Image 1 (tube, rainbow, N blue to C red):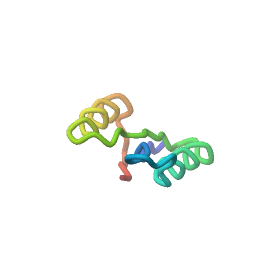
Image 2: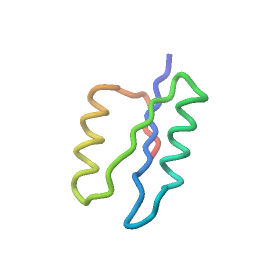
Image 3: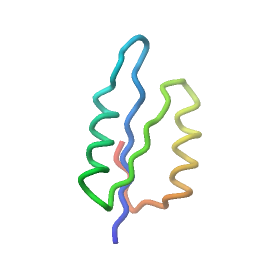
Length: 64
């Protein structure tokens, strides 16, 4: 089965939600081949978190 990793981001600054986070989590609930990851918004930290997840999930596709 195809594996798709979809990313979203945590809320920026004083915002309470981030639409990308909501979309990523919603897609994961609706499709069993989608894995979502919510990335931090701190510069330099997001890539490290993403890199680790890609190594674990080994997705066929990455949607950011």
